[in-house]
Length: 141
Image 1 (cartoon, one colour):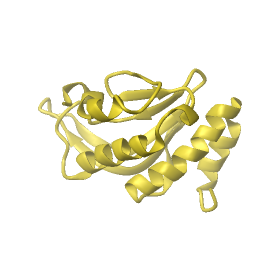
Image 2 (cartoon, one colour; image 1 turned 90 degrees about the horizontal axis):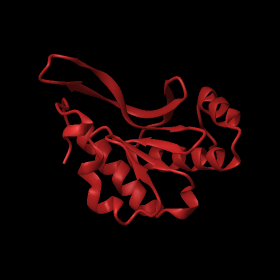
Image 3 (cartoon, one colour; image 1 turned 30 degrees about the horizontal axis):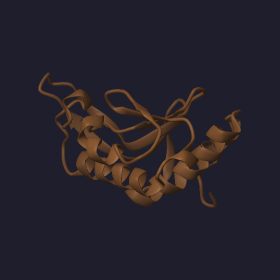
């Protein structure tokens, strides 16, 4: 984590669980490679990479991180805003994890296939940043 933003470094250093802290350092490197973007604080406790613009049929629109994660107490949350369903085949090969609509929860990155995870993050990022994204995560497939 040589050239990491000081705010990102401070957030990672504040993580008390050593596995989450180690995983956060790994994810900064992995997501930087997958997105070509540097890590930055996106929201409180969330490290983001790049941005994408969304505009839903409801009229709601805005900008959000193109990829991101949060080192939470029970597990690390990895955000896949194009929807977990969009990556079902790859996630079957990942290793131990659980999911929400747009979230992937991993307790220990040493137990998952990091090449698979990097492909999933890259694919999600490319989908989200290809233009204005018009689906919510629950609509992904």
